[in-house]
Length: 184
Image (cartoon, rainbow, N blue to C red; front, side, top):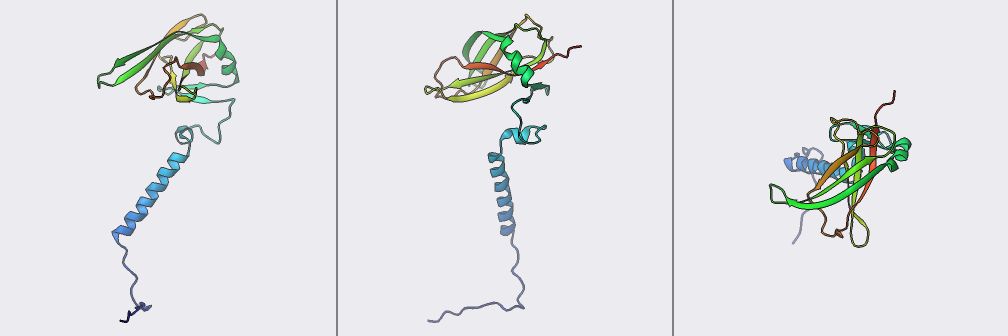
């Protein structure tokens, strides 16, 4: 048996492009975009002020209301004047029958500056004392009165999903951003 090998002549028309080839290229482009989105830190993709790597001395944060807060050297120096007290945790079910863990407490402004914004970062740990969940939330309502020296403010932060590896100890709470009222 002889197999004939047929090689097309240069006068043959080029092969037709099929919809499969277009779908393959489109799929490859989508996959490339997804891989890039997973590899790039979300702060680069979502931060409108990103112009290179952020410095540790001037970190900017946006509250859900779009108010900008900072954590530069002045804010970091003021953070120890904000005490977090009366921390309590509770569990409840939401209207979708999901368990929600709520963290409540009070922030005391024992410094001499008035604040317009405050963000707290909450870290949950596992039994090996590794961070398993870290979330930052704004705890001062931008529409509320300024947070003056000597004042107390209650806060409440809800978590819909806590990892099952949580060690059930109180999470660590720290100040991660704030915004001073302008001084005149």
